Length: 344
Ligand SMILES: [Zn+2]
Image (tube, rainbow, N blue to C red; front, side, top):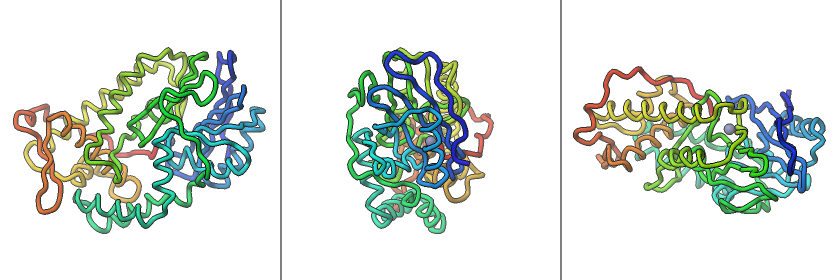
């Protein structure tokens, strides 16, 4: 099918006009929004997956909008957003991304060997059974979904990738993630940091340092968002956010609930990250769902440790977590968390 729909973003046109193109992707999330803008230079933000339907969708989006982009900006290095980067570079586009995204590209481009070693080492320390580790290694291998660009240009947060278009540091959903803020239009390209009606996946990934706290950084990002002049928020999936403050509040409430649930789980028993994931997402028992469940459970555990509400220690070579004394009496009558997740 390729291209699902193209529509102009209302109210733009001072420096450039923005268009949203929704392209179907061969992944559980089903489709992704990419954004095109005319102006100097014409810009494409994000580029779907390395698959024939996405290539067709991208070319159809160029025709439908009349925009022939010269610059591709990648918001974050996930296969639904960065897959066609190398292919588009071959068509003549320059590729730009944050320093962190380009670092992550380098990591994945080294092939499966080093990545698999890291994934195995991580999961063996966090209690994941061997069969599940094998499945996680398979789904974490993105080499068939992404064409790697050869000469990406790195930008720091706060720098402008084009006139009036600032790269904004956006930690949480993906290492090195960035948003783009078109100051003149009040348009904020939010990558997957804020989505309409969906809680973005915030995960601690296998190659991160023991000190990393993606959920804490994400919460600080949501607070910072309130300081921007924002007329419109354009997300990586789904519809534009009309009442974005309400969506931010919904996401914050969801995380608070989840944290209380985790403290409750780790109040009586010590738990591993794997056990935590299986208990809060009982339906996520294999493949991509299990990997997302474990990395999300880890993000919460890391946050609770960094906030001093939980402690982590090593027992028999495996990391275990326990709520600190006095914390575990928090609400025990919470409803179970939802089970199904998408790879946004
Ligand atoms: Zn996405």
